[in-house]
Amino acid sequence: MLKRLLLGLLVLWSGVSLLAEARRAITSWDARAGWETRPDDWRLGSPPVARLEACLAAARRVVPAGSTVAFATPAEPAESALLYVRWAAYLMPAQDVFGQDDATADRTPRYVLSWRVPLAGSGLAGLRPVRQLPGCFLYKASQP
Image 1 (cartoon, one colour):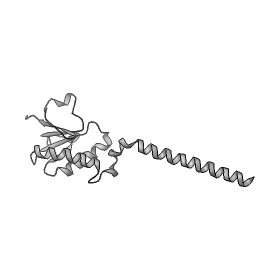
Image 2 (spheres, rainbow, N blue to C red; image 1 turned 45 degrees about the horizontal axis):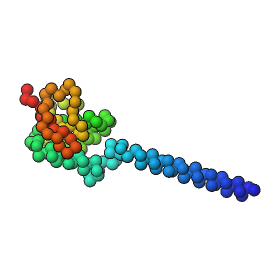
Image 3 (cartoon, rainbow, N blue to C red; image 1 turned 180 degrees about the vertical axis):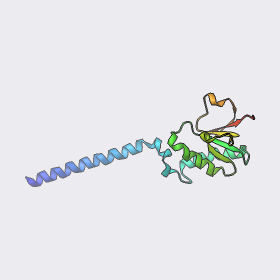
Image 4 (spheres, one colour; image 1 turned 120 degrees about the vertical axis):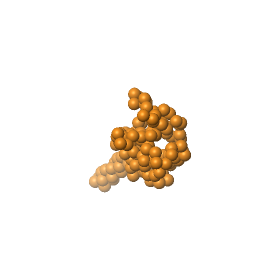
């Protein structure tokens, strides 16, 4: 009788453990939309970096060297914006790339790159669209 009870508890524990592991695996698989924004997934050659490289390669052909470029991430959460800006600065070494919120009177952007979605709102008065690039949008600031 005791052996059957222990065997039953072992089978029950195994079943619950299997269901817990399956639930955890399905939850992480189903959350794959958030995979791109995790910093540990951003390595050279990974899909997020490859998409950003495609955008910035096209931008490097249009934006002259030495230009100031503000990199905007309107569709991304604020906590991952710095990650995108730093990768953009790394992938565009000939340009001065900084975050859209980091613009100052001494450091006004000549160009603005918007990642994934076009810019919208009242702050676009001094910007004119240049072209849509793979995965991003390029704007040029008007001369003061």
